[in-house]
Amino acid sequence: MGLNKFLKEEEQRAIVAAIGEAEKCTSGEIRVHVEPQCKCGNPLDRAVEVFANLGMHETRERNGVLIYIAYRSRQFAIIGDKGINERVPADFWETEKSTLATFLRDGKPAEGLCRVIMQVGENLSKYFPHKDDDINEQSDEISYSD
Image 1 (cartoon, rainbow, N blue to C red):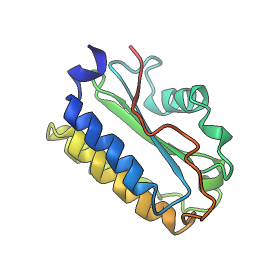
Image 2 (image 1 turned 30 degrees about the vertical axis):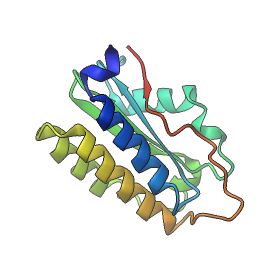
Image 3 (image 1 turned 90 degrees about the horizontal axis):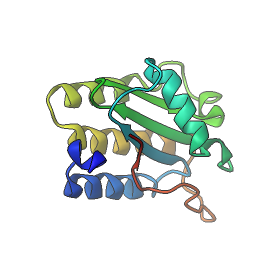
């Protein structure tokens, strides 16, 4: 059952659709990873670990983004790869983090994820616009671990 405890199937479909839509305006690759507990206590450290495990550092422009949520731990992180971090201001993720925190606090995780995914796509398009030869280098599906 796992992921369905946190997000209903229709919510999962909406999130996957939001990723596909957001990636239409950027060459960036957006992923969402969900698990019940943050396995190492620090969501940022865990997000880095998941990012590596998913091979997100292997994109052509090093422009992958991971939105990580540990729902029982009530923790999350949003991280970008080296290519993004070299181009964007230090506070680049603050709006997205604030938005997601509000939706999570209000018990609307799917709505928050969809909103943040669209914001990420829009913001990344300024630095990594969609290209004619762009391919989907990462799955749009939500990854999950127990």
